[in-house]
Amino acid sequence: MSSIFGGIEAGGTKFVCAVGSGPGDIHAEIKFPTTTPQETLGRAIAFFRQQSARSAISALGVACFGPLDPDPASPTFGHITTTPKPGWAHIDVVGVLRQALGVPVGFDTDVNGAALAEFRWGAARGLDTFIYLTVGTGVGGGGMAGGRLLHGLIHPEMGHIRLPHDHQADPFPGICPFHGDCLEGLASGPALAARWGQDGATLPPDHEAWDLEAHYLALALVNYICVLSPQRIIMGGGVMHQPRLLPLIRAKVQELLNRYVQASAIMEHIQSYIVAPELADRAGVLGAIALAMEAVRPPTQPPPASAIASQGEE
Ligand code: ADP
Ligand code: ZN
Picture 1 (cartoon, protein in one colour):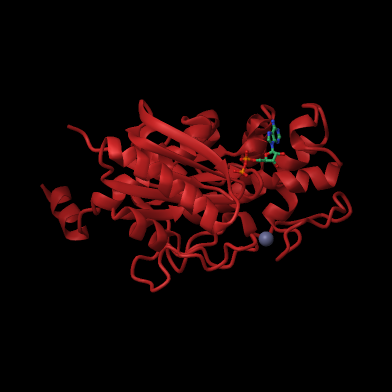
Picture 2 (picture 1 turned 60 degrees about the vertical axis):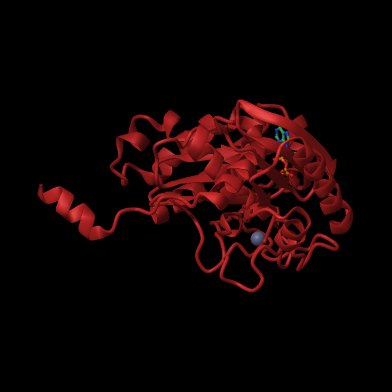
């Protein structure tokens, strides 16, 4: 009998809770708006209690908006940290859920969750170093390096990198409350809306907005490619629903790299190098389920260097 897992896609505007074990196996799902922590986590707990009365849940995973503390060795592991979202700063999400539900809780950024789901079931199968970038209300990136989800000091903040910004060509100052014209400040959904005076969803495909949007995203991708050498970049989020964006970004990435990175994946097969999520808008909630699976089954460690060396000598 296969195990059942619970997952929470904990977003700044909505929570999605589900139980199941993968894309073809979701037994129940519920969505509700993110209000106060007490009310929102309370609704999640009620849902999982009701579900576990039917069949026991082995573990819970939370793919969460951030910034957050994903380090299990830290005293504030499982907390959201400095979010400007009212009421949510320093909330112990994992502690509350673990105490109420009594199961192991996996916890990571929403984008690392989505990256893990794409790794298990989607566009990153078989890869060990890749990026999952979301361009929506915010811009955020997660992924893996050498088969491990990207962590470190805290977690990557790929949305807040600085880019060349030609103020003459684009006088828009950017909307990031911390940095103004970082990537998120220039290219998130709300930045698009503020710059052009209408929501990205209503901007026509031939609007000049898309060329500029693709320009900033391509600059960001080129930086990630140079730093991490990802085997693939997966781009999700509401803004990427504009179908012109992916082809524009691919062309600009090639142009910016100028054949310097000698990889056929980029030079000849870029349409399968910069891609949409295979799990589409399900990557978030499936990521939460995948994090639950990791909570009870730690990822296999890469073999020690000596083992690799001795294999090579055989
Ligand atoms: P979130 O980031 O909050 O999880 P989404 O990934 O759905 O949510 O992103 C929401 C953002 O995407 C909004 O700013 C919205 O304007 C923008 N958006 C949604 N649909 C489109 C579209 N078809 N084209 C461009 N932008 C869109
Ligand atoms: Zn910023």
